[in-house]
Picture 1 (tube, helix red, strand yellow):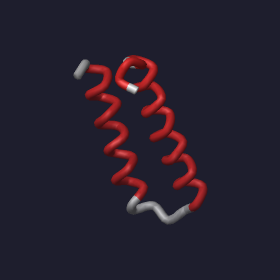
Picture 2 (cartoon, rainbow, N blue to C red):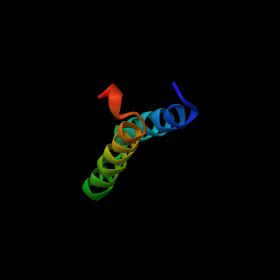
Picture 3 (cartoon, rainbow, N blue to C red):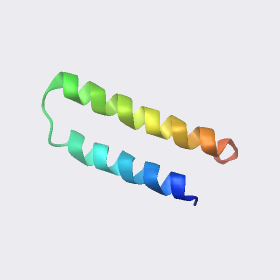
Length: 50
């Protein structure tokens, strides 16, 4: 796995853990947005991996 993907995976994991502690709906939506963005960024780097 490339360095960019490793960093994106770290960020995704961090925000997923954080979302377990946050109860504010707006913050939850923001975290879901960031997770989706990083997943899309990862897919854009390696589109062949699906």
